[in-house]
Length: 253
Image: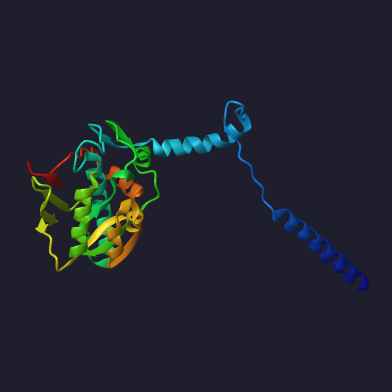
């Protein structure tokens, strides 16, 4: 018995020593920047290890989901654009059923930002990679409830900012002197006495692109759905995507 106790004590001592050594070993992590240039030669072993993962990712990203008969751009209109209209319409279509199922309410309109669109969609096949190129950010869709006065501030921002920010469900008409002639939401005039559910991104809700009017939101609902994933889901449902510059925001001549 005495011998067994000695062995047990020796075992605990060894465990303690090695444990202390491991702790000391993991207590410090160092790193250094390695510049990738012509001096770095490809490694066959690394390439062969990464290759099956790269092939799988490329197969997923490059599978054709839809078709675009023309180039879709964010620069083909002064007040709204084909790319902006597509993105805002997608968010309204894809986020609406999720928001309704969780809250019993409806999204009234969508506002995103022109700068968030990072690429055109070229004429031809549309893939998941197209969605990653247009929307490389991890922005999620959030629905903010704004009262009528705050919606007016939002529209003044759209008029004054000088870029065709994506909107859907909202129509703004300016007169020849650049004054707001009408604001319609889902086809009806703005009602100052009610609140509206506005789908946007978490980036804009937090004041991105100087959209500070969102700080006056009565409350907001994060629906755990990335803008990019909404695009991919939409592309899977349709055969052809053909957005156009329309009358959702324009100035009378």
